[in-house]
Image 1 (cartoon, rainbow, N blue to C red):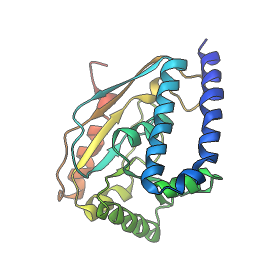
Image 2: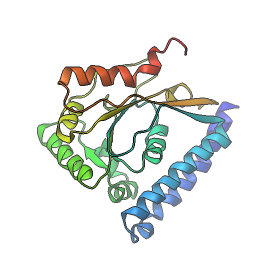
Image 3: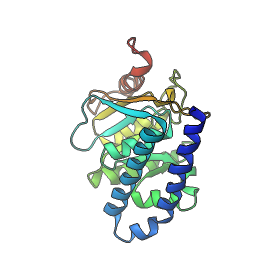
Length: 231
């Protein structure tokens, strides 16, 4: 049954997503606010399809702060990339530059206002990321990063990538860590399973802390669901 439901989800959501992406040039004529509203509608489509076709629900824990912040999220599935963009009011999302090469989608992501970064994390790449992040902050937007650098399986807690600390220092914004457990029902490979995805917002962490302290606090907070004894 799980395989059948996953296949149905892929046919419906990804099929509609092709049409959504192809239509973005028309939406882009109305400016970035329209693009962001359109992207949020797409994220809502993912959530409705996940609920109706896969039996996956979303539980949000903790308070979402008001005003710009640096959101640092655990990354276990594609699901939270879209869902958090919708919940957080169009943050500038730090994404792998390779994604920008996807036909149509990469162009649409650029119009939305993402921050592409090279996975090699060279000095030049990090400087570009800082510049784009400062521009987003200057426009009153929050910034969201997956500080472990890539999707990981449930139970995996790799160290934070170097770019996070630099971004934290450059932006001077409070950090809001977000723990997720999407990988339990939305694996990278194989059928998706019915269940609940938890998005847990941690307490905001103030700017200006030493690198070791901010990295330790964020790492612990985004992995809170991995170590929660009640789960």
